[in-house]
Length: 98
Image 1 (cartoon, rainbow, N blue to C red):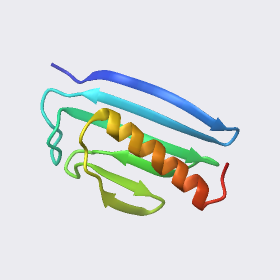
Image 2: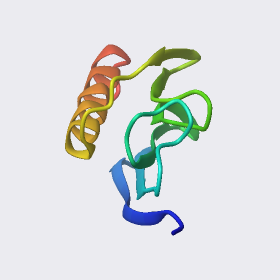
Image 3: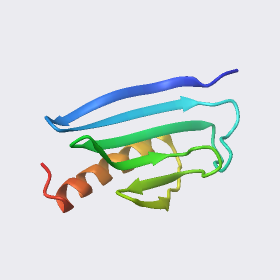
Image 4: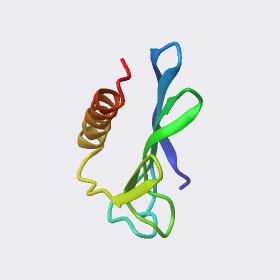
C-alpha cells in the first residue's frame, strides 16, 4: 500500500503570505517517527519559507523556524495543525507581520 493523501490545503493569509499543509497516511512509520503519518506544513512570507513542520525520512518529527531546527513531539494530526497555526500567529506577532 502506498501513502494515502489525507489532506492538502493552501491557506492564503495575505497578499504576500500563505501556508501549505499536506498530510499522508503511510503503511509504516517514516524512519525517525513513531506514527503512521508523513507531513509537510510550511508558512511562506515574501517567497521565503519562515516556518516548517515536517518529518523527513531519518530526521523524524521536527520544525524549522527560520534557519533553526528543533524536535517536535507529534501526537495527532489535529494537534499538529493546531500547533502549526499557533506558531504562525507567534511568528507574525514577533515579526510585525499581519
